[in-house]
Amino acid sequence: MTHITNTTQQEIQEIVAAQREYFKSGATLPYEFRKQQLKKLLAAINKWEKQLSEALWNDLHKSYEEALLTEISIVTGEIKNHLHHLKGWMRRRSSPTPLKMFPSRSYITSEPLGNALIISPWNYPVQLLLNPLVGAISAGCTAILKPSPYVPNVSRVLQEMIEETFVKEYIGVVQGNREVNGHLLNQRFDIIFFTGSPSLGRKVMTAAAKNLTPVVLELGGKSPCIVDKEANIKVAARRIAWGKTLNAGQTCIAPDYLLIHSSQKAEFVNEFAKSVAALHSNDIRSSKHYVRMVSDAAFKRVTSYLNDGEILFGGTTNAKERYIEPTLLDNVSAEAPVMQEEIFGPILPIITFENREEVIEFVRNREKPLALYYFGDKKSGEEITKRVSSGGACINDTIMHIANENIPFGGVGNSGMGQYHGRESFDTFSHKKSIVVTTTCVDLPFRYMPYKFFALVKKLL
Image (cartoon, rainbow, N blue to C red; front, side, top):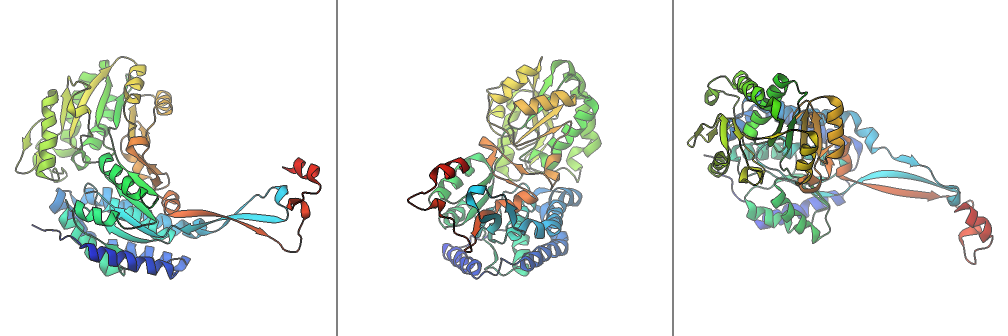
């Protein structure tokens, strides 16, 4: 079994100092440099695709197809998007200047924040480490990458790939457990990008506050999935089964619990069972596309939720393989443990409702989720997404809003702060600087003491 060795505190300090000096040199600023680094990252991912896919299989039992669709292709698509638009994003933008400031002109330019720290989780260890890196490179920052120790094979391959591709004073990798995270967070960075749980997000934000460092927190929460009485149940069941069994539910935007109209419940359970069989065969455990729990602790935590309700479908487990069958759980109390914390596994609690106002009240009385899913008619879905705050949403679908690199992705409230993907990634790692340029050929006296012609000036204000 692969083991990760902790990077020492001294090594961390040396990398941080080297990156600080490298950024001060101005090497990362030119457009051509940024473009070439993005191309190098794209070439590296293509070269290391096989090793990354094998590592994902070894750590998570993630198939090549799922690795490509949910990890690798999302990063390569992001890189291509940045390469296509980077020059335009870097271009300074003129801004109107009011008459009271004549003869000045104004513009806005984007400058890199500087030295970035990117801490990623284990559930999508390639995508959630490298996608923020694309934004850091695009914006002209340096970056220290901290992969998760819970997926040691992936973390090892990522380090080898990065070290072969970049010098560490530009892009460096730090490995280890939460003690290493503590050493990292004691350093001063210009931006910290963290993906993980809300509890760890609070610790990151507390540490960042010491240096007034801006943070992007991509967290999670209990994302509701609403199936209304007008929903196409066959389609809804298939898309929910896919979204819930993708990565065995270990997805920050997986449907976490189901709010379903009472008239649709029986048909949904039947169609969900059919959909799971179509996705993973009748012998789900033997399916090469069905992921396992990342650790024994995760397996124990998720299986404990099986006691919080009546099993309508699924429920089979195997501790040795860390296998949990996709499970529908009925008669669940809103106060049960399975309804308090993000499940992060293939268990879906079911709660019935009679009218949409119940649903709106139920979701709004809880922390703001990272995602919200609604199945029913488009107009009703738009009304619910308008009245219920969430990081993102899909109407008649699940998960897919993260796949569009042209729209921002991020949380709100307890599910996170800040956004990325596409232009948002470039802006996240940048500072928008406003600049006013004033000619010296004309120097109007209105602004100077003792404020002559004040009555005229007052009219211009």
